[in-house]
Image 1 (cartoon, rainbow, N blue to C red):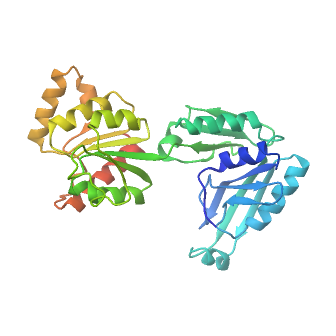
Image 2 (image 1 turned 180 degrees about the vertical axis):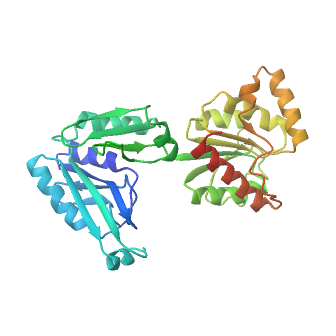
Image 3 (image 1 turned 60 degrees about the horizontal axis):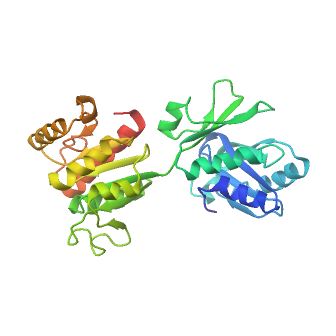
Length: 322
């Protein structure tokens, strides 16, 4: 049973098609729970389901509860213990306990609120869905939970009555320069949850043979970044060593809200880069956003090791700040 990232969209589609829909969300876990807090299962009125709250351990019971909740138009807060045997069947060493919130769309979760959530997700706007259990109300917030947004961490607030579900846009990585480091960084970034795009106007570098199955933009970097759209869930990595390619991309990145900017080059190369950007009118604080030389200082030597250091630095900045 696979997880899905479009649970709100599927719930809205089923509701608007007249099939009825309920969202089941993991709101709390103890022990080695099969799915993390925030995982969702969507259940239609006819019993069709998509997604997962436990990898298959308790989905059948949740579907039955969700159908009953749909008929009665009421919220349900369910608790299940996952046995060691069931946990082993879905790849875990031991079991745990999960709590699942079931919200019928329309009666409990207002359709207009769900539609607003779907629209914000479609526009790549980070949003928190706040639920006051037991009739405490529901609302969407785009601020107020900076640590939760930074850590992609849904969960209960200290009062144990307010649940916050974080809906962050998918992570993206724009790599300028289809060099050897990029060939190692792209698959690593995919494993870490990024959607990478490789940008290089030099056809010999940005080829399908060098990056099979990947998105390659053969445009000038500034034009490509404008087309991609750089936001707070985007990392920009510059690997060409060529100011003609790097600098225009840097100017776009520095004027954006991207969470990470890294540029390959020695300390001397970076000093010259700073001089050029200063002459172009960028402030010391703006230029200070650039991580150069790029990557954590782990003594990396090979392209693969440098890629590891870059991804590690991206992760640190994403989760802990610059």
